[in-house]
Image (tube, rainbow, N blue to C red; front, side, top):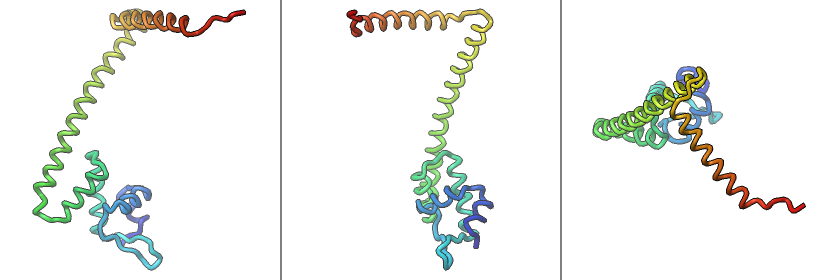
Length: 152
């Protein structure tokens, strides 16, 4: 049997995360000693490693709980577990595409700022500057209409 401290050292998980996982029912069959401290079996430690793998897939706690529930059902739940993993893969691919697009836009923006530092004003900056100037003129007009002038 392993203490909380030993499990934290073996798995790299923090005390707070381990306690949270226990309180969320993600780790089945955790024992307690006479002082009511948690004690973990070898199987619990293996289970925690599996949970950490699921977390690395960016699964939510609810998804991890569902996956853990399916694991306890044995081989009959393999198709359902596979379906969950495939859905997670699709979500990660969508997120990866969004991140790739964000990186592409970030790189373009960085290039434009490098050009600007070299004295080359990119067309996008000129358009942006013009839009900002138009907006400022509109805002100035609104301010003049809504803020009364000093009567003194």
